[in-house]
Amino acid sequence: MEKVKYGLIGFGGIAENRIAKEGFACDTGRFEALENAVLVGATDVNPARKSAAEALGLKWYESSEAMIADPELDAIYVATNNATHAKLAIAALKAGKHVITEKPMATSIADARKMVETAKKMKLSLSVDHMMVNNIYNIKARKVVSSGKLGDINDACFHMEFAFGYDPAEAASWRCSNIKEMGGPIGDVASHCFYVAEYIFNSTVEWVAAAYLPKLMDIKAEDGAYIKFGMKNGIVASAKVAFSELRGGLAGTLTNLGYEIYGNQAVLRGYGTMFQLSGYEDEPIKMRLEMDNGKTQKKLAPGKVQNIYQALITKHAKSVLSGRPLNAVDGLRNLELCDAAHKSARKGGCKISIVK
Image (spheres, rainbow, N blue to C red):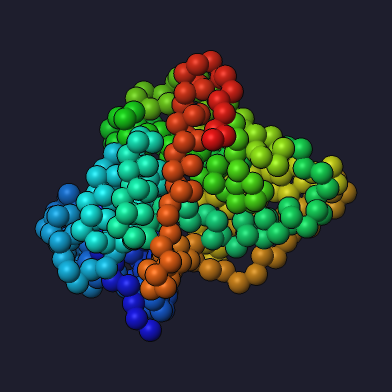
């Protein structure tokens, strides 16, 4: 089968371990090669990352410009700091390259719209890394919700709360030190809560109301936020996101990343289902999905594990090979929700409509 050839701009820890080793199956000891995609090379503003890329057999590019100009490549994966996503993605699209970008796709709605418009004009596939919809536990949750087994759903809570920024190096990182990056808890993880909620409920968010958590951390970004949001199907849910919560240790932190979905017949709870993990046995925690009717708690078996990053990449590659490009409108919507949450929090928690 023909394979789409990708270059990876940005080679930090997530890019190396999640995108390259897992997503593109560069860790050949764990994964078989993808059928329709291959990672050819990488680049990073930090030249010290060259050895890590070459250790995976990747070609090292001295700059993003050199990578984008390489006629060997069909597509670019942008995994840099948030503020550079739009510039790099648009440059790649204008050079005739298909693009996957990390979320949020941009730090302004205007830039995100320009990305969508450029991809449409160039007839290229543009995708945003909303990888958690590929988690088999979240896929199972969507099926349970649609089955009606929970009864009438009138509430849900999605939460991604952990500690990041207490360490001086973390506090100095772009996520914590520059609010223009939209890298605080709202841009970094409420974004996940929004698209996972829309996926599980098969509906779109129509309004958002938010409040920032008390400011106790010595970081420029918000410590966290409590967000209420209403969906087109009538469900009102919440998202709790924070960089300020210690949560004990690794197990407490990771299992806390999940959700509760409340019906009048039962509650569905996901543990560890909203993170970078896919559900493999060798991962640091064991995810679980439980249905609780008040008397019995039943663990639900989701089925065969699929790597959440590989599913994202193979879908994008398929769109390239089939000539049916993705349009990233989901990424634009997601950014609009994050922007609305910040606006609401700055205005005292007022409800902001997202309906067009």
